[in-house]
Amino acid sequence: MVSIEDLKRIVLFQNLPDQMLEKLLPVVKEESFKEREIIYEAGNAATHFYSLKRGKVLLEAELTPTLIISLGSIKTGYSFGWAALNPPATHTSYAVSVEPSEMFVISGDKYLDLLDHNEAMGYLIMLNSARILENRLEHRTGQFLKSISKHPEIRRLLGL
View (cartoon, helix red, strand yellow):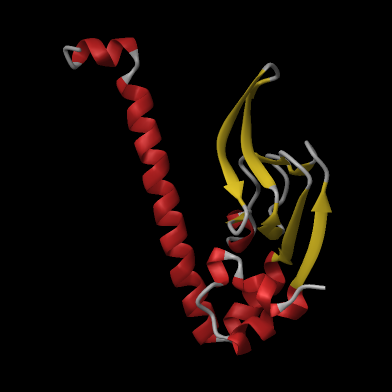
């Protein structure tokens, strides 16, 4: 059973008061995934939002049947499956547990309904979401710029 203390370990929920976390408890389920188990696939409907209680998850994209790239890793305490908060949406990547993992899973519809009916909680969660996603975007932008700067044609244009 999920507890308030469990939810406080999730970065997205860390600064929420206990009475707000109590409202989340009825919509949060706990699920376990085995090593290399697919949590969701690219192209599938994005219906659930996930927060990692324990373990590690990779977000991957299949460029060809023989070329799969890692888009990022999700560590304990962080969330993924953000597309579920923008229905109707589909996943653009795969989520795969790298090791045995435990997650908090929330139906996207129930989550959005809860936030719609609890404006203060919705505001705090969306504010935290914006901060988390901004950090992730800055990290990915840095990775992209570093990668592109190593491309031979770009290096030549830069005189390196």
